[in-house]
Amino acid sequence: MEIKNILVTGGGGFLGKAIVKKLVAKNLTVTSFSRNFYPELENMGVCQIQGDLADKNAVVKAFEKIDAVFHVAAKAGIWGPFQEFFRANVTGTENVISACLENSIQQLIYTSSPSVVFDEYDMENVDESTPYPKKYLAPYPKTKAIAEKLIQAAASKDLHTIILRPHLIWGPEDNHLFPRIVKRANKLKRIGRKDDMVDTIYVDNAADAHLLAFEKLLENPLLSGNIYFVSQDAPISKWEMVNAFLEAAGLSPIKGHVSGKTAYVAGLIFESVYKLFKIKKEPPMTRFAAKELATSHWFNISRAKKDLGYYPKVSTQEGLLRLKQWFSTLEKNNE
Image (tube, rainbow, N blue to C red; front, side, top):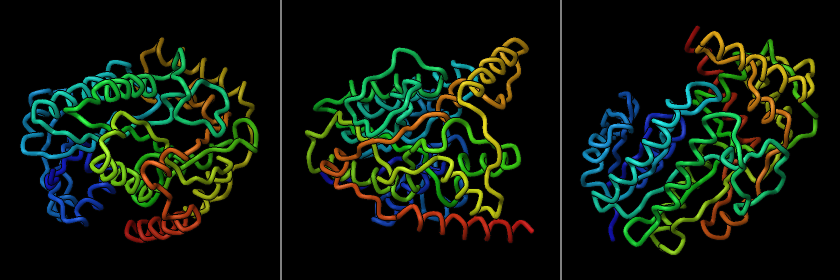
């Protein structure tokens, strides 16, 4: 089957745009389905459809004449009403699956998250056999886990699916992780041990993993339903990585330390107060953030290497250099 027309949900987002760029470079016809319009996508010749993933009719219509789908769009974050996360991440994914089936689309690559298996404890060298936890401390990992199960259950002779779990995506044009760290630079404190290790992934490597999943699934439909962790394959101390981000932004390293237990109690108190007074903005700390920041989480990517031929092309050192150059240019343009 010849694949020419590709749709990317969230094609204007950080990862979505990186995937779109690589698809365009392969001379494929690309459509982005997003809430907003993005001039940069228009300049690349990408067809843009504005819509809401929770609107089934809009999704089904957008998927007409499409051959393959990358479902990247999601509501991320560590705070907010459960129903908002459910609407975007679960209902939206249900609609994507339905739209694929109704339009006879056989290829679906889904962007998940390692947080779907985070059990509040250290996760070191874990693989895809790791079970889902019995409880979640935030709506994002819970709804992403539900969506992941839907994608896996949808794998059939009519719809071939692969699920990818990239962890802590970063790089130039990052609009989530890097800006949060830079914005909070003066208030940041190390939480927990100095030596916890985490996996991260440079945005172009994450995009490469998605294209490899797409290509390998075409070659071998028996991969359908599989889940893959993808990363830099180079676990690093999270605080070393945070300091590297701060250095890239021309800022001083973190000073001060808070124990994981103290951060968790603070998160519990903040959550209780914010819920009691119905405060919508994100608290300074949550239980989920405290547990994430005080534990190791790095993953065995042998399965992605074996099945997809995935290896990170851009090293962490090279990625940090590119991040620094991008941020420096951005600062000059804003002067």
